[in-house]
Length: 286
Ligand code: HEC
Ligand code: HEC
Image (cartoon, rainbow, N blue to C red; front, side, top):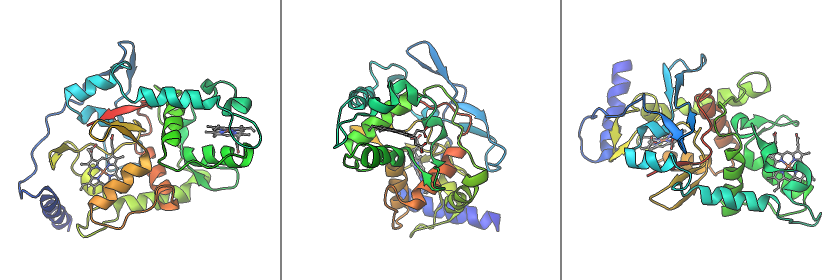
């Protein structure tokens, strides 16, 4: 049964690759060190969390990138995502909405957001699972009298980048028990469910085949500790939900809307697979 499933996935992946070629072993170095600006070394490899039996060790997506892309993330002057961090930091004290307030009016300096990214998504006071984008829009609409930002809009990704940067170097530490448990279970189910014409689950690629090559890309574990990420190919920041949306669409399945309940649950489960890796702030991808 296990063998048959693996064979099915290999066939589906060969279809995707369009070559029919078998998997090629990746030449990546799990011992490589990500040191930012020569002084802050981040945790890119850790023991897998106890509730993720499918993995022994967990690895940041940075480890799977080629040395030239890795180098861009190692230096804030060359990391193009830092422009978004600067824009988000400027927005922080920008007054907007009918209440005449900015984020800083209530939260003081943006450093007050330290640790927030590491714990997202999390269950709010009303018992709903919220991503960082939901918290931001709640403040904008209910506390500032301002318009909600679109999930993948420029101000939203700039703000999430600036807030994420405050947790750079802190371990991802999302809650999976208590009130979070049912959401986590739903996300887990989605992670292992085969979908689309190609009948592939997230696990088929990111658990069974990380380190291998697909369509000229080097498969990682699909971790989210580096988000938002700057894509050099498209020249912009990508949110977690935008990335999920793309991966689901690539299996030729109907994808879910960014901000939907399903993608928030998936976000929680995927984040928990990276519990222990460092938040990277804004990472760089091809
Ligand atoms: C009028 C005051 C007020 C303003 C203005 C405001 N916030 Fe908030 N914000 C709050 C309060 C109060 C909470 C706590 C809500 C809770 O715990 O339920 C909060 C929570 C948050 C959280 C979640 C933090 C956490 O630890 O879970 C984020 C993120 C956030 N705000 C971002 C922003 C951003 C970005 C802006 C500007 C666009 C902003 N806020 C503007 C009052 C404000
Ligand atoms: C057909 C194989 C395939 C499937 C199925 C797939 N992905 Fe991906 N995914 C990729 C490729 C290729 C990339 C880009 C290279 C990389 O980082 O792995 C990627 C990237 C990612 C990334 C970005 C990682 C980083 O560090 O930049 C995340 C997160 C992700 N996938 C999550 C998911 C989730 C969640 C699912 C299930 C809904 C999924 N993927 C399904 C192939 C797949």
